[in-house]
Length: 281
Ligand code: PAF
View 1 (cartoon, rainbow, N blue to C red):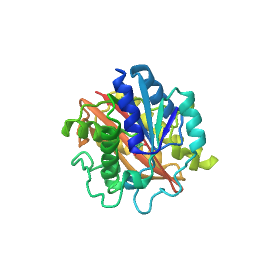
View 2: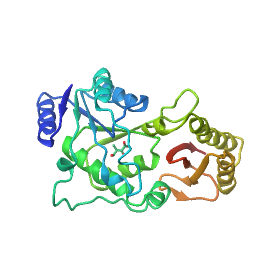
View 3: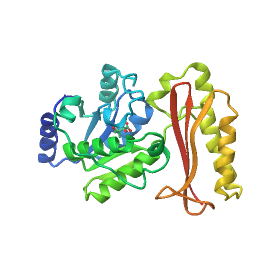
């Protein structure tokens, strides 16, 4: 597995692969790999000749009081896991390489970013949209792979690729969960044993949502209230948001119809976790 620290190096690698007629898959990540990342790499390997992983903890998508400095990092372990997963090249740029002096261009997806994490993390999606646009322009993959856990991020990336007439196919894969239902996240390592137990309420409340919808409930307000109450009943859980919205625009709804998402963000101590369930009703 090639380790590329500069844009010139990864471009060179991709140029050679393309010259040999190979298709290229990109898995953008912030590292500290878990089974969710590995599932993206595996799918990229199945559907593309060459797999590139980018590993960059993008400062632009963190707010001033967020966990940029604490974000878990283990480059040696990540390299070993990526190599094991059959990744061909890993792109690990520095901040200087990504945002050199004088950098002044930003990508902003409006509307879709008004709610959920866009509301509770101002500037977050501007950072995500800007870095993902840069990564897609640098690597120019045929396909780029993202996880469904970050459902709003997935929608934002699909929209920017469409709106900016980019050629990439954006592939969104299902959330990978621990055996007990907790969605895989690099941030799970922050949790104490008690918080880890408390955090199961995310999946429990979303499963209750799904089952209640399956039994026929269509009132978005009632369903939202049910999820909220289940979460608020856990003393260690502080809900950041609980929303039931329509898809594909994340529009507010009163009655569930067509594509819907229930999305939650909850703090356990200083750790903020997100999860969601998507249904067609
Ligand atoms: O989902 C992530 O890990 C990040 O938001 C991404 C897409 C790699 C952009 O920094």
